Length: 171
Image (cartoon, rainbow, N blue to C red; front, side, top):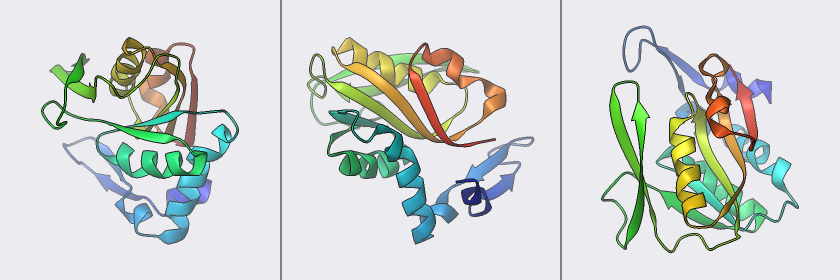
């Protein structure tokens, strides 16, 4: 899977000075890269009886829906506030400066369902932890997390407790 790193564009100083941004749009436009990414995210969970894949806005939708299809599971989007049309539950979490929130439909996950949470990037872990809190608050069981990229220096795994964390690529 390391060859995928050659397809991802590195953009220095985006979105601000000192940040190296890993732009996955170049990977998404390359059919073999996209296929390998989805395979890398899904394959560890084949046969794991995943009921629902939860994708985190917005790149988690791209990978999460494809992973759900590969696993024969349903798909649920987790969105920024005000984007879902029915009754929602909300989780607020801390950012470096301030807070943010995520929402999920209140009937999206049923008690006891096995859930795989998918996103493109694990950085500090705040967004993934907030998503797990939403799932668990509705009675779902977080089986694991799957990320295309993990930024090791930011130690996002520490916020995810004892859950299995799978990353296709690590930087």
